[in-house]
Length: 351
Image (cartoon, rainbow, N blue to C red; front, side, top):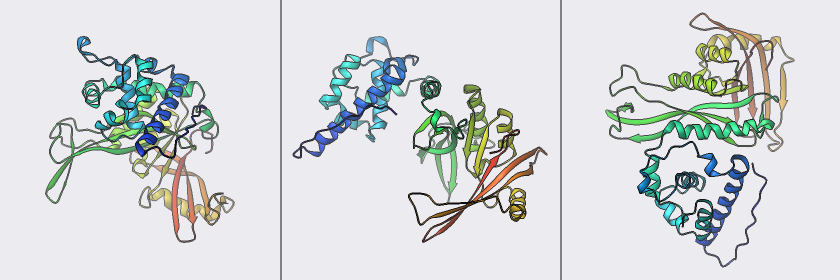
């Protein structure tokens, strides 16, 4: 997102390690310029995160530790020991840490582990969310809005940790062939763009309230909690949710209607049968609702779109909703795929 660039001149005789060190140093430089431009530097970015360590035992300032944690993921180091191998003994990187934080080199990987274990999750989440809010407020992300208005927010679950033995009282469990696996999934809300940028907005942990719950937590329950948090954190942000078929149903529609959100949901073949039956029955009535599109980078691929608006759906709570259904039939030289997408109507505006 920053306009800065960094050109590298690397000798043909340089080793692989030398090339990696120079590339990492260049990446760090671009990161520093970007953070300084948008967030006034790492010190400012992390100013509201409280340091959990004893003041007398602090060697590395907290912003330096947090910055190193960012680099672990940005540089895809894979393990804490790589911090020592790739950053602590990298002179250009060490020089940058000295200039930024007044320390000889970046913190050790074990220092990261001990510090991150004790940080407030809410304070770290506030940094992540606040960073995206800053980009929105400065209109950096405005060009990526849907129809010039709606920010696209995808919500989906992902796995984080898996154990063969219980990790904590909040683990979710699944038993297969007599073997129980304990795991910790979470639900993420991310702002996405057509340019490939993805920005984390909020994270909701999917976890049981205790060791022996009558019913386990799940993505749907976490979605209801996450939606409330998202609306509270961004009360006036025009949002269009991108969801998979798990969320296709009355509760999701009602939440989006309540909060004034649009939504696009991939519709599985066995989901919302009444809606799909109406779509199939009405499709021939609107022959004008058709569009053929050929992606410019895939000249042999054709996409045929058909849609029907104003389909009525009544959920299990007897609440009526009005939706639209779009079908995309994609034809390739060696395969054919079909995708159903459901788009909500909110108020008088048509999607």
